[in-house]
Image (cartoon, rainbow, N blue to C red; front, top):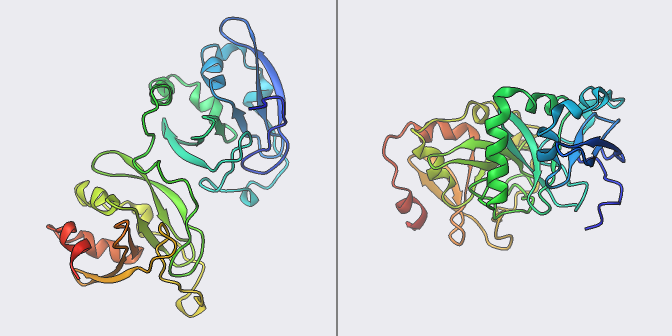
Length: 273
């Protein structure tokens, strides 16, 4: 990988500037920052070196001004790595949602997040992220899936939301067009098994389209592409299930009613005709 090429900012698409600081061994360390949105981009290993010598960071890097309207920049879950052009995924580190590339292991921080990671309370969380990366442990339960998915109901691209399941954190796919939610195989059960706790953010999704504005319903599995979903009645709630990958599509406003049931046999739901 050619590290000499300019990096395109994952958030606002500006060409990022390079700066040089001294690391903990007093060696030169280069990384990239953006004057468009004040974000900072670190190639694999650079953030760790910076965090070992925070006093070497110039004030201008911790307080980068921006000239762009941040409301018009790309949201988390839709950002493209400025180094290898892969989709970056949100990863929670010390209560911050930072963007991580699983291809080249680079990391992108929004303006102000670098300063927050330098705080003492963040040290343990940052170290856990570094350990996960070094040992190649999965950062999310469903990290084998990389592609952007289309909603089978309205054809909007799904966005990612980080939620807590019974076994760990995973990225859930939700639609801002119709507020539908896509669960990859096992994810619905994971969320339900976490004491049937419904994330508040899933209950308050805003929709861009009314039902009469949806004209491109395909009912195709977002994951398998060419296979149709099968309608299922799950305890009185309508859902669509893929018999191949066992994914489930359900409208977000129906999840609360579904989770009010104390005992759900997910195996029966997926395999019954």
